[in-house]
Amino acid sequence: MPPEQPKQIEPTHGFPITHTIKDDEGVITGYGIHARHLTPMRARISDKLSLLAGIATLYGLFKLTDSIQLEWYIILFAYVIIPIAVPWVTRYAFYELFKKNTVVKFETERFHRCGFVQRRTYDRNISHSFAIYRHHRAEGEDRICTALERLLPRVLTLKPFKRYIGASRYIAFEYMDQRQDLMLVYKERTARKILARLNACDKLMDGVAGNGRGEVLKPEAEWSNHGGSIETANI
Image (tube, rainbow, N blue to C red; front, side, top):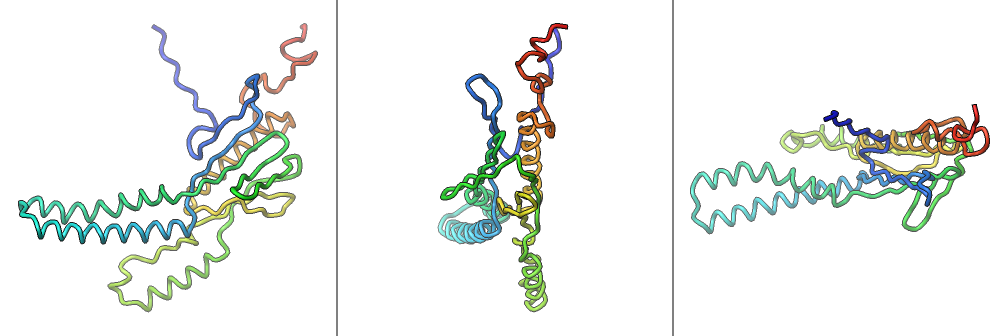
């Protein structure tokens, strides 16, 4: 029995979710990217709600153990494990719940930033690129947090204040050297993953368009079906 061939990983595999758009003949005509991410505000709200959920859980746990006779080891487990697990679980749940879905679409001639109210369309034939920027309010946030950490009692600042804005990045579409912000993403690592996927799809679409700038997934994609192509040439 011949060994099983390893599955080939496509450039559009993984995060963010990327759909290949094809016509009726199976030819690639575009890519759609669905980038689910948090913003600084949504991350802050999620953290506050998870904190409230943890406090409510501790209060409910106290009332439960006070009204019901339980074995000591069950009570110990409840007061040690649950307060540790609940904040992590609720934070993850709220992060997933509050994530924003930003949709962009690549075509051979155009690039679209799809919005709920407004759709922005750009000409891909004009000089363009994708870039990442730090938030313009990051330094101000850092100064405020640093001042609060120095002023407040040590017991209230056991952990440094979270820099939600400082940890966020703008992903922008550079259109003739003019910055067009596409999305604000909480966590630089997430932002760089989205940026890498945007650049990859941009190169793939250049290959599909046949303008000589991009990448092609198959060698035959570089040839047309006219006379002199790889299919019809008589050598």
